[in-house]
Image (cartoon, rainbow, N blue to C red):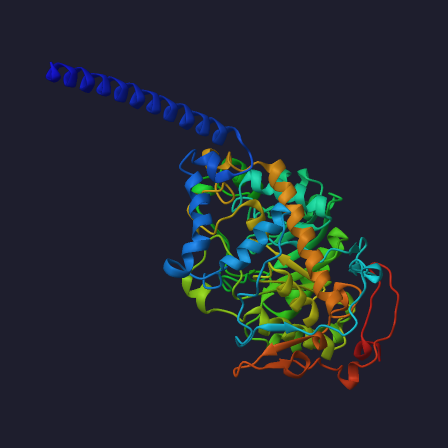
Length: 525
């Protein structure tokens, strides 16, 4: 009797357990189905859309890493090329969420080369603060000079290196933020124009978008590009931060029919630009080309370069004074040796060129020495994605800052280092449609605009704390640099601003029209 009851009890337990198991399994399947559908239909997070359910673990582990990282993983400020503290600020700025931190700084205040800003006893009051003042590029020399108040702009990233939705989001976001977008050397696509932002057209060594069938610069195509009112300036790319001396590289897997048509090259084959301009082999060639492009387009024209050997700077400035100011570039973009790239040889990424902390003051001081700062504006780039870095560049004498990877973080980049493989998991640097679907241009455009606005806002916070009304008033006297002993030293002592040479001390104030010759003191005498 007892045995029968025990058997009945055991059978009932097994039946109930089976039912519970089936119920739990069914609920689990329903939950997973719901999570899958929620992930593939949402447009906020590319990882979840491209990797449903599994992608959620990234955010869980990222959150748990805040608690376990000090025992098992890298600290907040140890990763490269951008550490977690730098990326986290960019993500928060893009999402327009609280960017404050608590308890105290995790940044050591004794690392050689780091910047310390000097707060004033009387900071600028909120009611006295001013927005960044406008700067005009090419005034008196270009038919259509460009005036803008933007501080931080989108650096050169080619359509091809970036996906269609990424370019669309950057264009729309830049328009919302009132900043410009550089096309990169891959030519002008419809997606650059779609958002309505100001455009800087970059002319690379392969002349993509403005080349003849033989690969030479086409004046007719230059005019066609200049016809777009959104195209405000032209930039001749001499070299790029991550690979000076090496042309652009776009793997064949990313050269689609559309990209090939825009660039004027065969589809499916590697797009490798020459390592230099065949028609620019000396300073006179460069200045002649600048004048030629400006004359053809009517738009301000300058050039981008990484500084290595710097003896050419003296030669260029002397030639400008000798030949006339119309030969001067309207701007120089100074790129850093630690700049970004979609693909480059490691030997160049790691060892070639000067970092921006040395090259920017070198260029600015040469222009001061030859009294050319009013004529030539300075744009700079190279890992300037946080407010303190942008404030440093302005303090050192830059007129504008551009960033590429900062805006990639705004798009959702997770620093997966897959840019050269067409496997970018966030859809930014890939032409795999399945991966691109995770990047919603509408949502990401808002994040691009938020990033730009919040970055400029916090640069303003630094400026106001230093006692100046707006960011462009920052100067070298407002910062100190930590030396090898861990002691801050005044930046204006370590990098004393140059004074004009006596022969260039006074530049005649000559208001000129387009096409009229403008000369410096030597050629005028």
